[in-house]
Length: 318
Image (cartoon, rainbow, N blue to C red):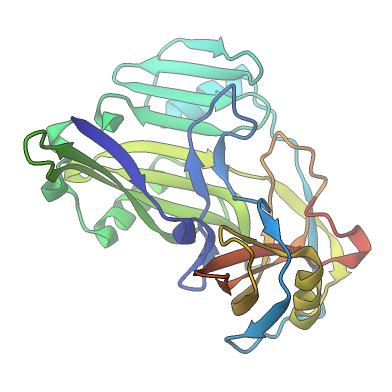
């Protein structure tokens, strides 16, 4: 049988790539899921840690940073049609969804969907993204660098590259054929997903980004975007990295390791944290993203946490 899997590990979803930007996780829109779209895997499975050590020197940041006010992202039918036209689509527009309303344009073989409340959008080449098309065999996929150039060119030429977007890395989707006689697996499908993350004041915005999935022959199979529009509000005093580590001792760390005993901080980065646009989030606040390794009773693994850096606006992420 043929199976398709997205080969993005826990670490790749959460870590900073090449010290530039956060990679958001990707999932399709779903009426039964609270937050479809490009997600930051926020604080879940938080566990207390008794000891925190340092595997790197803490960075230096200015004593203050800009806080941004979020901007309404509601989408009208006309707005949806204009975006669909950028993809070269001219089919009829329909309204869909129960709890989460969206506009849908189908122009065979493509489908475009955009949520009315959040502006989260997906453009898909339906048959090609199925994971079974022979054109998308691994031997037909361009290199990662070529896929990056293809993605950048597609977004720019179609007027879809958001201001402030910065390249943040790639991930791969793979499909395998399982031989029923001897159980061996043969790779039959591969794609390359190129991620771009929003930036504000030169810092990445965790949870706000756009991605382009490239298949065989350099064809664009899918584009997804979840973006938090924002405007400057005012400068606020922020925590130092040292103070953020002290907060980490209070908040605990996010990890899959059971009964963690010791955490080693490998990197501390200042960023902004964006919840899904349909959530009420008045401000995008400077936030420290902290990650590293953690030791449990019988295993080791990784941890992460987001620590809000503006005491004046409270300790919540939003």
